[in-house]
View 1 (cartoon, rainbow, N blue to C red):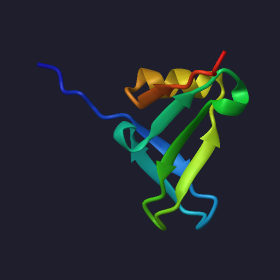
View 2: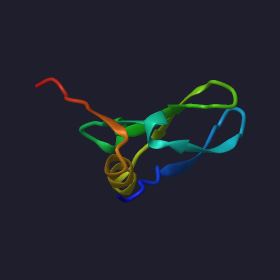
View 3: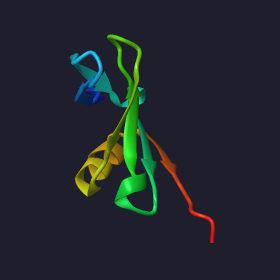
Amino acid sequence: MRRVVPVMFKAGCPDCRGRFELAAGALRLAIGGSSRTTFYSFTCPGCGTAVRKPAGERIVQLLSGAGVSTLRLHTAL
């Protein structure tokens, strides 16, 4: 039986300037129709601030490949 090592992501809070590592379960990914509406978010473990950061194509690949909860946003036609 193989042991699965959880993936950890380095992150930082723009409010308290804290630097920390987060497991995939602590992150959320939203994929929109453009780069402006594609982002990841988390709650800072240091100060409790809700943090939202843009996610480019590479970040989307890394986060979704690691099992981060993903929401696909749709635009009205």
